[in-house]
Length: 180
Image (cartoon, rainbow, N blue to C red; front, side):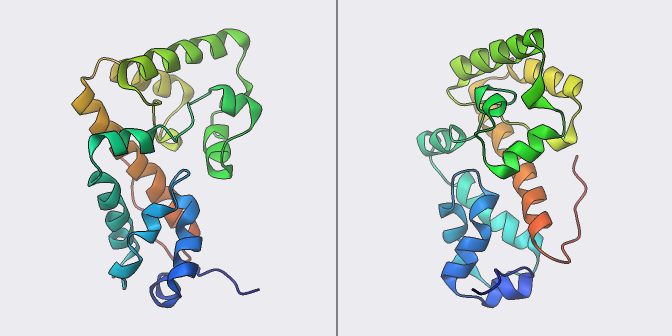
């Protein structure tokens, strides 16, 4: 068995199948995102590779973007408590111990998740590694006040932050970018 590509040079020169396989888990249940940029190689930087993938998602029409967003797990939701998310999501939500909330905390998160999904039609998406549990809850409550257009853009921004961190963790010698 061959090793998956681990450097940008390897990603730029490997087979299309190896590239797609190496990048498949960057996007939550959406390996097609990486597959759509394989023909754009070579990428000059990890940032260029990431931006190409973000552009694929940004170019989707609204129904397709909402369907893509819907593939993401709820923060501190039932999937988190069951441990039935992707390994990346388990690790990310684990930074705030979202799988082990008290009953009262779980009820609060569940109510926010339900209100958000009812309002926008997809789960609340947040780059949890940039937050404490308290700041995540504040962001949740603030973003519930957004209009749909603003929230569609905010969700994409958060997904871009999540995927940038995932990509940088997988590519050897990737210099992490500052998250704001």
